[in-house]
Amino acid sequence: MVKITALYVMKCSPEGSDPIILANASDLSSFGFFQRGSVREFLVFVSRTVSKRTPPGQRQSVQHAEYKVHSYNRNGVCALGFMDDHYPVRSAFSLLNQVLDEYQKNFGDSWKTVQADNAEQWPYLDEALTRFQDPAEADKLLKVQRELDETKIIIHKTIDSVLERGVKLDSLVEKSSDLSAASQMFYKQAKRTNQCCTVL
Figure (cartoon, rainbow, N blue to C red):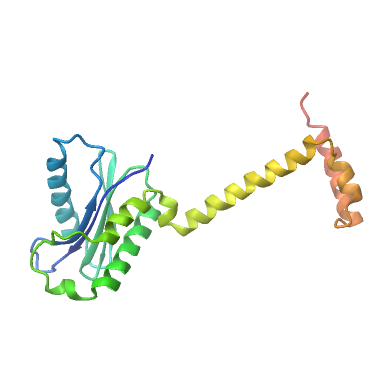
């Protein structure tokens, strides 16, 4: 199962100072209780390191063991996602883009005056961490593709169920008023052509 471990929003100063945490959310339940403090510190360290090295207007992914850190710096506000290796990259950046849009909508340019890490929780980020565990939620194209795949499965099941009830496809083709004579002829010729290749 794919997993998002943490999401961060950082203020990146071009003058080289350490980035400042504007918001963060993490799910450390997969780590042991006594490991969680160290993991949280490691997440902060990597967030500062990666966001500091992500130029404005750029996106990048950094691989570490079975995890990837995806980073997107939009004019000094940088969103980061700590995901496992199986989380699709396009979905990850789609999620980070949504997080930055929502941050701008909620806080505007107030981030420019922030001077220290923000310890307050931002409810949207906690919701996003939970909701986007499924990559299809972050990536609408992936979601549409999955819905199309499900529809295709239903269509296959429907045709199979019609055939199971003893109705022959040949008789349906002959009775159909939707098919022209040319289409019916094409169907019959295609069926004859494919019969020579049938393995018994």
